[in-house]
Image (cartoon, rainbow, N blue to C red):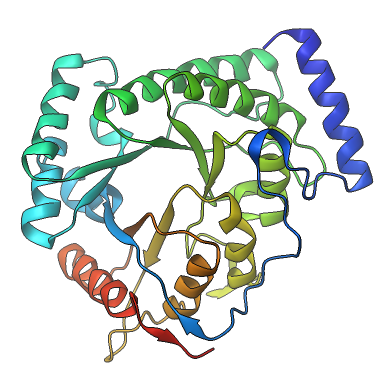
Length: 318
């Protein structure tokens, strides 16, 4: 990140934000939206997609050392019949540069016919930090996980975009994320950001950042549930937010908490969301991320998978 380039980027972003020009820029391969995506999809068939398992669904078992990261692909395939896995870096935090470990993990996935989809990255610094030195360090910290993702055959890493940006001030975050996206491009690894708390769970801020970076290598990972709540109720229209994130999606996180007697998620209309996903033209992996407490981790994963399988190819009635 050269200072001259940084200043040019910052000046452009500030001017564009002020004029509302960040919407639909179509920079460096990003889609230009003719109309705003809607969280009220029309009736029709829910399309095809693949199912993966986010490792966080088993975080209690992993943290209790009941299972090990190296066994995750085998568990996904043999216990749940799932063909793709999404790793979480904290469960192999010291292995990013361990080529022997990564080769072993890649082989285990291949042996079980499991696709290594992505790595979710936490604890590597704030990409939107006010001080440039801190942002540069955060970018450097993330680069080793780009390398690890490439070694595993993943297509992306999920990053946390930080806490120091807003819908009208994304310059610092965009500067750092663009540098990381450029590094990812060298390794054919996409950098994707989830609505994961803070500004990222504000779709206005997250999309301003996506468009500020302006790279087809930098996209979203819409999570069904990670939006602001007050007294147990969502404070924004989550369906509208997901619809707005989907044109930039390089992954989808099917967050689930609990289920009714008919197998439907109690908090979220999965059919509506999956029709939104379909309407965006997405047919990639949809990652199960169970975070409930009533059902056990295995039962929650199975319930989420059953629901997704029921919806795949079904008719959405609106």
